[in-house]
Length: 593
Image (spheres, rainbow, N blue to C red):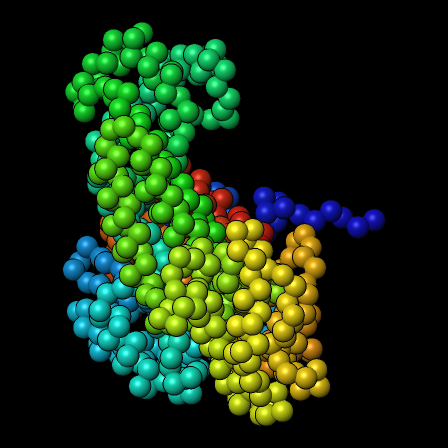
């Protein structure tokens, strides 16, 4: 009879395997190398793995450097087998040693239609000079032997404009002469807007933070608080948590939960004198107007919070970006309009909303001057094609505007977008040598279709004019845009293109590149940090080459195990490291790819 598989606790492991698992755990958990010299850590590991001797911090450092080189070779080989164009995102990090780092991330879809996001460079930069940043990126691409780049996402700083301009003149085979090379970062923009709103409402937020702290620090108060909440009929699974002020999503979550318990907080003010005294020593007890302002902040942050969660996932394709841009655009408009319902402070909030909406539109630029890849990516979603761009975004945004010729502005802008999609498709036709697929955009036919828009109902009639000419002359993009699509649950845009790649060999190659473009240049760990991206004390103390080694390797190996992070409490720390080692041994320590 076959024996059941053994668990880690009753298996014997070679010392080399345990040491590799320890190194992986230290990198993933962001522990300092010196953690192995703590007595509690050494004792718990050596007791668990009989015969294993915990190495010195110097040995751990050398192993980390070697692991970085090994994993880099694997990833370089994998990237070479992917014949698609690569998209990049650029982000700046700071250390407490007055050294800034440029984080370079590659985004691409492999031959199996799987999206990848890999940090390929974390290099020191001595200034914000655009040409210097451009050279750092150029050297990184040369090191990784990457020559085909479709787009680069970065923040709004002029230095990034200069860097991408520098790269545009040096990249081989830029698509449409680099016309779509520059992409801006949606998360940077939302963080900037959030930072301004949090500053405007800092007092009521500080009040709530003090109230939450006063409740959380007293077990007896927590017990009474929960009991009263149940008596008031408030349904909750858990209480609020204190936020990290530099991470605005945690501030939103704190406010969102605390607001539900407003009546309980008011009860506590009357029934607990010590609670009142503690609040008085901080920033005072909130009055009713403070809660109204808190609700204003919650309403503003909610849509941005949901948007951040969607666009910062590990496997997010670019077909959803236009939808998120549109949602935020309309949210800013609605936030301003809703301020007119308030009797106090409405004018101030309305003016703030107008300012945010103007800055938001100015950041992206007008359609014809923006990066059309955002719109084209939406078109490459077979559920949407041109509908999201036409109806949901352009028609709603420009419905009252007309050109000098009397043409509705949104229709003219839609025409520019579709024409750009055809230009891009023909570029890919030239790359593949399939000249018979060259497509001609029928401007008059498309505009004729748009004129069948029915107006107030927000609906289009069935398309009466196709995108292409005669059926026998239709190109892939004509056929794709003219086909109906029956939506179904569990739709996966990459799987759809994988299944249909034989029907659309040229268009699918274009889709594989475009669907990988990032609209966020911000790393997952820092997406919500309104103070910027900061390396911790340990990583700041390392040499630049070692910083790159630990940052890149952490990104490449076992991302799902980041919950082992934690550096407080020696016994707890030892337990976390032991847990991490066990997880690495159970998981086989698979690397990147």
